[in-house]
Length: 126
Length: 126
DNA sequence: GCTTGACTTAGAGCGAACTTTAAGGTTTAG
DNA sequence: CTAAACCTTAAAGTTCGCTCTAAGTCAAGC
Image 1 (tube, rainbow over the protein chains, first blue to last red):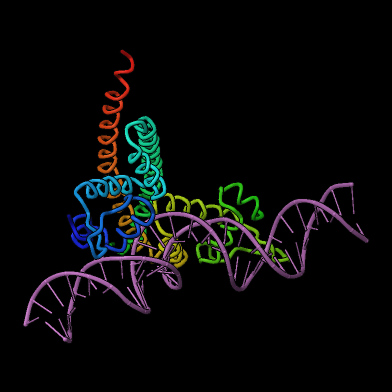
Image 2: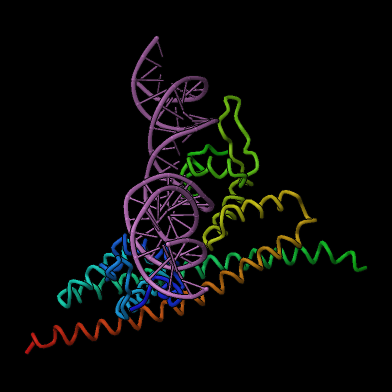
């Protein structure tokens, strides 16, 4: 059982963010102490790690919430989850390809400017 | 000379967005007809294409505005612009590497689920 | 027992990048 | 001449993902 501060340190998310995620339905219900303090379990930590993993690849909190909702429904949603993950993965792959294309453009732009800079600064060396 | 609608079609940006970009200082000042309508030049289109290029690699509008401001100042800012673009390019490259790492995690997650799905659905085939 | 600091809530605020609205002027086809 | 389509502005609204505030409760050290 971990306090919100401990979980904050373990996950790198602020306590504010952890409460926010819970409010948004990403964590189901977190256990509470007698006095109402949140008590995170190792399972919660696992889920949080999954959240970060999906978030880091650009999945929206809404989609993550949907995915975790399905997880809580048990094994009969496995197929849906696999499909969701596959769709997400393909989206990310496509995005990365796009990104590469755009980056190539930036690189060409950069080369153009570098050349122009040489032409501009070069004469001073004479 | 192009109307805002024509430019919207050519760039894929809405007329609203084009006005918004101008207001945010991304386009300097666009020429106007007698009656006050915007008249975009081919130069403007070039600049817009550059904006999209930078935006597509995740540069913020603020940074793009800064870059274009430097462009308008002429050749003495070439070095600064090259440095800006290089910094941006490195940031994007780092991001893409990060993305790949995170995506690998998603892929492993997906494989795990696919396996679990096979185990869950498999028995039904017997 | 009291202070300090961590916890609780609901709700307001923020920055980015638009997007929409309101209220009006212009152009053009019939 | 008028209606429809397109233009203008300033400013308010939206979505996302937090982030912060206020006002109060609880726990631990001295």
